[in-house]
Length: 273
Image (cartoon, rainbow, N blue to C red; front, side):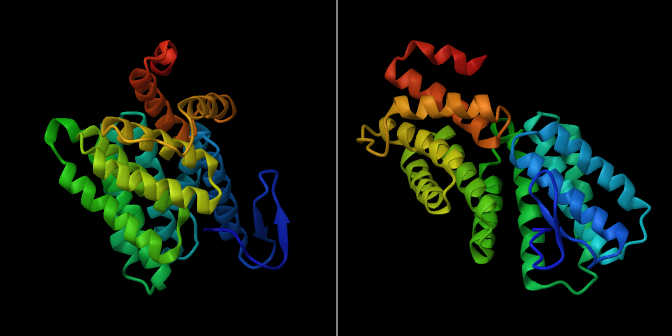
């Protein structure tokens, strides 16, 4: 999102391209490092990404870059930090960064934004809201709110072709329906996620959705033809070795445990280590 300029590009060691002379030094620093942090996050190096997001935030607080850019970038940083702490089950920090996101979103709306920027703001806020509520889902029965957030993320992401959020929203919806025992609805969202993953060429999410789809169909005593349970489990082992903290590896770990339980495969215990 922060990269992709067409001229005067320099390539970093993470294969991220940025312009050499289109922005002042400070703004270029933030654009380069936001791309690095997002790339680290994508590959599963979430702790390293978190530390870089925090360094960017600290420097941005005292920077002289324009306020429109500053608050827009803060909003994205806080969305990523709320996700990190939600996955770490740190509820106080998740709530804290979710609240900072909301404050930054209100401030940046004082400026003229493009339609795409407005849609990204909506995606970040609703996805962060989902991650904030998910930790208390079973205690407080917030499934309706979580559905609302994820469906809004999905609709917004479709509108601008934001592949990551299309898949994350569908993964969240499929998982919630599975947890609630609504396996026909889980199958619906899992199939959409599987098809989009195939279209986008994202094998990590494809096999995660295959795991969800297998469980949903098995619970309804339907035939699963997309791939075999063994293929799903072997892909998980490969992904876990290459990208141990990749978000789809974490989802797939839970799915593989369910598959092993359904198929009575003894290796199920490895998915709970």
